[in-house]
Figure 1 (tube, rainbow, N blue to C red):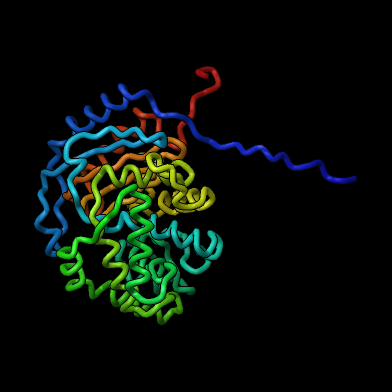
Figure 2 (figure 1 turned 180 degrees about the vertical axis):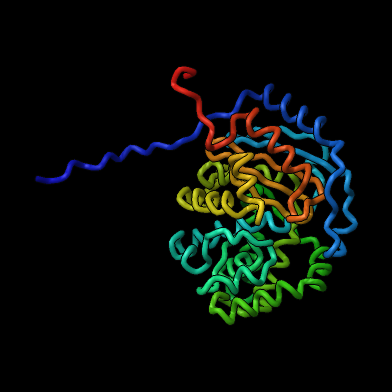
Amino acid sequence: MNPPPIPTARFVSTGTLPGPDEIRSLVEAAYLHIRGEAGGQVADYIPALAEADASAFGICVANIHGDAFMIGDAALPFSIQSVSKPFVFALVCDALGAAEAAAQLGVDATGLPFNSIMATELRADGTSNPMVNAGAIATTSLVPGIGAADRWQHVRQSLSRFAGRELECDERVFQSEAGTNQRNAGLAHLLRGHGRLYCDPDEAIEVYTRQCSLLVTARDLAFMGATLAGGGVHPLTGQQVVSATTCPRVLAVMATAGLYERSGSWLYDVGLPGKSGVSGGMLTIAPGKGAVATFSPPLDTAGNSVRGQLVMRFLSERLGLNLFASDSPAHR
């Protein structure tokens, strides 16, 4: 007997955001409720970042239809830093295929700090995941291109498509980081020793440092996140930036490793893929709905924005974003 045909209909587990007025009201409430938070410290191991205004605070929510809701310093530029990691991983997944990208980079959480050397040494195959520095440097080394200039242009142009506008490198931040990134350089050479770096170490570090120095705003990040939330299609330009099959792979790694050693607590409290950066940017993505981005430089001891985390704890339940939340049948 022949097996029955496999149904071809595609079903996805997504919902919708509340209406615009409710979103705006909740974003304003989050801003007013959290802006007085004084915890955390601005990153000072990169001299250019140490000058950040600790009081700067902005929020932007963008949905997959192109609507955006902003408050505070959501249009203030800052360097993207580690929030670039999911998007460069998306480029590599598109270039190599998700299975090959996972095989070469690893996708398991390390449970250790973002710049840990031990995390690489503890794994027999030398992999980690694309959300921590070692894995992100390896990811950048897999970006298509011949030489640093070619590879960098591919990164810049691709992340610009995610943002829906041309992004530029902050040369001052780049020079400041390039003068203090000896640990990342050490990670690159360690990866090469494990056979997990796929171009010259100096080239990988140069491109990786430049990608972290790209200038964005919270609004940019929200639309970049909404692109991943909407099957790789930018909500405003309509451009297919990456394939729809790449997006869930990127979001899965964000969910398990995007906030480094705090990722488990984050997922437990917020229930969403997230990514933070040492300049104070934070991005949270609700698949099929949109994204929330914040900018606030003071960080906790793991390198995650204090106010950014509070915003998402405030908004996740109120906007119905938590991936693991559901109603009982009696309430439907």
